[in-house]
Image (cartoon, rainbow, N blue to C red; front, side, top):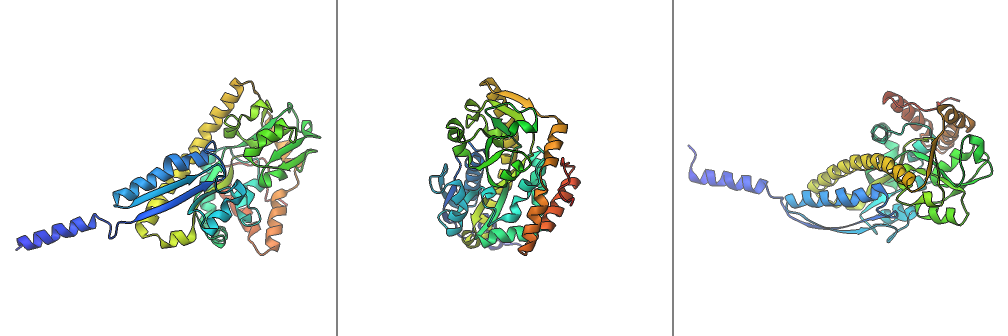
Length: 352
């Protein structure tokens, strides 16, 4: 028979189960070298930060955030080190600038001319991480954990001159970032390394004749004002950045906070991918309204461009293999996963 004391005890146990064992206050800093004009950064502020705060509050925790974007703490090339050292707990790390420290993560940049479907590409990247432990281990070597891989929409040319054939690029200076510089190896153009915040001034002063960049930034950064020709070639969507957390911080968090943060990051990954897709379409439309001239290379010209390149993927894989890293394994696994996802490349990068 159940007595009043038993009922009272059961009620107390139920109440205690609904309240975290120890409500805590967490002070986090999240940084980015890029401004919120970049979709992956804006989604941190509009989704990840408030979602973590909301979910933590439901468990009685308090989260205080310092959001420091647009290079106020570190430039795009310095975010990896800033999070590694603990200057910030979270960071938007553009790993395309970190080829030396995160070489395996450059996989999409050495296999161009793939899909423009960013959501599908991110699914492939998730599967690649699951099959290749060395990819996560490289981030751990930099004292970080990837919470969410972040892709960007497909790359095109934005130039001061029209492009109808590949040969129209001859003699030009084209700015871009990371291993995308390799995409100019098959043409008589000079690649110039740079970053988004620098592109406008570089084109306006004549340092560049154009850039290879992704659709969603063309209008927000107003590139079309100084380079009105947008030539769609579809180099493909890219895995370019990651939302990361300092590993020391992560390991000290209680399990309920770890779960909250990871779930919020999963949602952020999908929202960021969709916002890039929508942002790309809107960006090109706005650029055309502003006077940009939009054209598209034929499939034949795109394939011809792809086949003019040396096999930059095999070169990359061989170099990493020689360093004891699984370059060939990553390349072949990525291409297999892409095919299984229905992604077709204009060139088989695994071919010798």
